[in-house]
Image: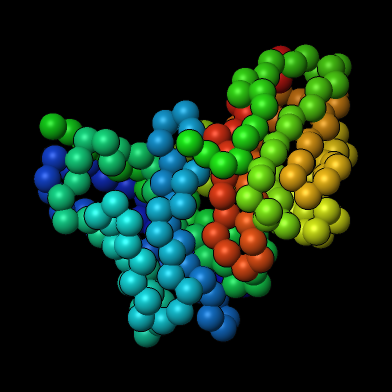
Length: 111
Length: 111
């Protein structure tokens, strides 16, 4: 069946450090891929998405590229801020219905 | 600001109570979802409504009863819950296909 695997962390970084959160997936066909972010006490916010191979999603300095050959969708940011501290979820959507989430990665950024 | 509004934000109920969670969206989305999220875990799908009809029920116990009165509203009726049902309940909506838009959730405590 379809599944998403992401590094669980926690990831602890200093402000302005480079961020990578790895995400790989297993799916038949061509799923859409997403990154969601959840700040403390809030719901999930769609951070970025990609719907086909080689697409790059980007938002708020975050980027991820849909790599079909490695079945990956790694999240990157060149310079993290304290305000980026949150839980990040990788997800896929193949049938246009509900999402399949990874387990989430907690990011903590200190000044 | 989220475009999916959930009320109440917090709810404490006893095991013999009946209560309802409410969700509203005005984005014209035709799919609406209920998810349950325990601390430090990804959201778990409960129900999906598509065009106001229940399309997915992820084997949720009958003490949870969803209702979709119209295309903008989604309710979750709660009755005879157990303490282990305490969690963050998230509503989401989407165009099909597309990323989900989540509300900020209702934090439910069952005593």
